[in-house]
Image (cartoon, rainbow, N blue to C red):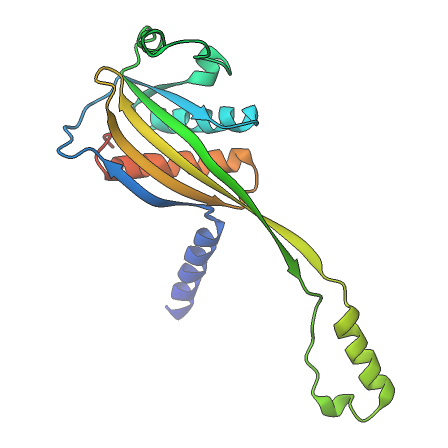
Length: 208
């Protein structure tokens, strides 16, 4: 029984350690009447990486579809410059012509990098083992002082997603997240999509 508990705890810790994206805050309209949207347009705004934009949209579209909500990617539907040179009326008309009744935006608010220097390996040795002989002392201290260190770079992404009703043009739902050191854009997009859909279901913005 004890071994089973330890195994379960290990699995939980391992699953948590793999998670790189977390929700920092969310909001939904007061007295929101649940609406079953027929088709949601997913639009990602990020520069200059179009592959990241395409991944974020694609995974969120797939996750919406897996929960029975039809969705399309703006990048796939219109290309990378979908609404350039259009005013609000023309852009909304273009969206509604595809049968879309809601718009879900994904915006990269900020991307930051931190560099940290990791010192070389330090091994503690009781002083009696080396202090009373010059070479033992010198050799041990030398390895501590001159053991090469290295730099690591941590990357954080700060995202915001908003859901708008295409008819009323009003904001229905908003969520902010932080992603820390994702392995690549595909894994980031996959985790982000699942997290957002889960939260939208929890907040009864969309049905299960």
